[in-house]
Structures are given as C-alpha cells and as structure tokens.
Image (cartoon, rainbow, N blue to C red; front, side, top):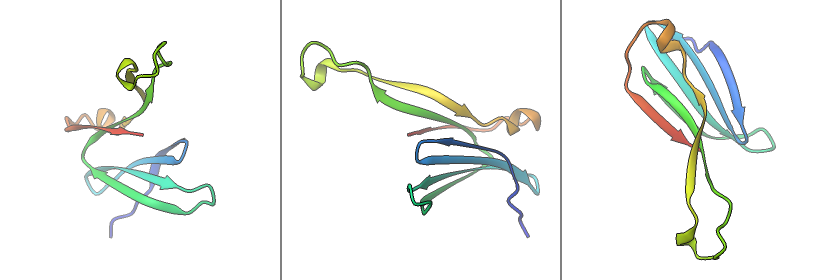
Length: 96
C-alpha cells in the first residue's frame, strides 16, 4: 500500500501544500481549505517539480482602465525533494 507521509507542509492563505515521497515516487498535494477547515479541492502531482506562485495586480495606475494595470507572479514555494533524490522532473507552476 502507498503511504502518504509528508516531509514538508506549507500554507499560503487557503492553499496548503504537502510534499513527500514513497515507493520510488515523489508527490505534492495542493489542498484548498475553507476557514472552517473543510478541504474543498485536492490536486495531486506525482514525479513533478512544482512551483507555487501568487498572482496579483501591481498598484493601480493613475487610470482606472484595466489595460493600464499589470499583473505579476511571485514564487512563494518550490518542491525540493527531486533535488535531494537527484531526479530531473518536468516542472509545473500552480498559480494561487
């Protein structure tokens, strides 16, 4: 049986990320958790290097036109187990 034993857990607002490994597979779970503690969404990634990035708008420009605003993507977490295992894995960005 496959056991999920997280080696790292991090929270970013309503998103919780857990990373671990077992039976030759590296895995990352991303959970969306409501304030009451109810998990409403689970995303599961196997043998993938995951980067979590927060997407937001820069400070508003002088005009209120949406075209005058730009968005940026700030990395807040990146999986590390693949480096320790010395594995090259495909990369994926999870925007929150």
